[in-house]
Length: 206
Image (cartoon, rainbow, N blue to C red; front, side, top):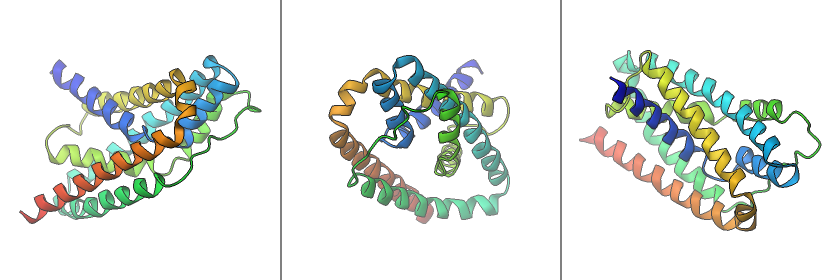
């Protein structure tokens, strides 16, 4: 049972870490704060953003639990997941062609609150966690019941903080190569979701 708890933390951590790995509003802002203000303030921002991820993942799993208890709905969602994965593939491909600019945060003093606020308006978070959690349930990797849900969302919160901290830790390196990193990571994510979409579609047709 302890191993199962650890695995749920691990799956949540990996999902959040790689879900946020692409240079975007949150991690690039954490990077900007690190360069302009310092490590302590950027860590405060990362903590604030990660707290919101905890609740976003929790909301996603609440809906995932409802959907998995309704077989008819889950079958519809599996079909919808194919379109979602293909849409995410296109989204990350288009993102790879855009120039990412970090938001200016130099005038804000409460960086923890700033992290809470910016993470709260991340509209893709809940659908992202919902889609992947349903997928993980469908392949019997996670269990959507307590206390497994709690361990999973704790993992998601830890994973998001670790990703932000990666950007903070390597800020000076990343800022010099942000265009190269953004393009390549987004292409990799685009291909990943394309493969997931094809895999899910093949399973539905099999």
